[in-house]
Length: 139
Ligand code: CMP
Image 1 (spheres, rainbow, N blue to C red):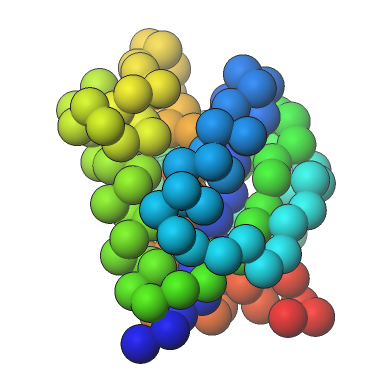
Image 2 (cartoon, rainbow, N blue to C red):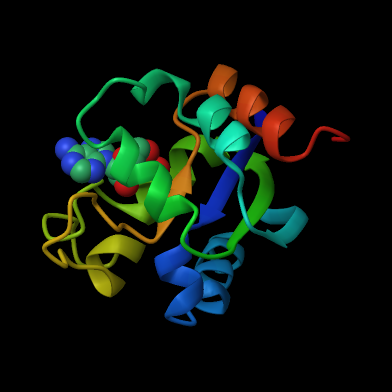
């Protein structure tokens, strides 16, 4: 089934100049880029995006981290792209993420309160449509 997913290159990825490498890997896998924007998030946008994490111990550090610089928000499309991107991204914890994945090859633990793990990808069709609506209301 053709799907769309929201991919974010988080502020750590943008700061480290890894945006092109992330796009290269996703395009090389065969998914199509349908929208892209460099932008700085707002608290309101992040409250909507991370609603399910509100109240967790890492929520505030996560929001501060996501406000610490611009992110690159993208929509990719393709058959099973949601699962496919998560597989390219690797496990949430970049130290444990398998080599060969974006987080496993390019990320690590920096000893901070939040996992700075370079990228975000929607985890299910419902969250993908919800997140695309938040970041790209016109799509
Ligand atoms: P993401 O999958 O984009 O959405 C939630 C984010 O919270 C996650 O990436 C990490 O950046 C961060 N995160 C998730 N779990 C933890 C945790 N246990 N400790 C710190 N940060 C976390």
